[in-house]
Image: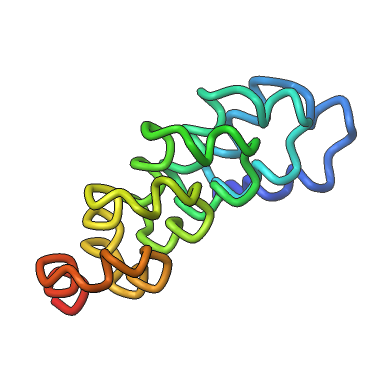
Length: 127
């Protein structure tokens, strides 16, 4: 049987606040985080599960998680383009940029200028 995490959008408000249901939803589809109640979006474990499944779910995470190195690293490892939703400080971090471009060369678009001039990073991006 196929599961659809984003079916959470059609659930009653009660279930969008149910930890077990929302966790299953984000494990199946990280984007389901958008339908979770706010208190769950503040839960690091939920956000981590969501970005492990789909790095771009970082877009829907509570703002402080966009500065959280653990969460952002998992997000860019899953999808380099998730760098778009990271904090400015992490977009200026060579290690994060490197992880992002290894997964998706187009992530170079979100790097700070000095890193776009780094030969090693550009080489990884174009590989």
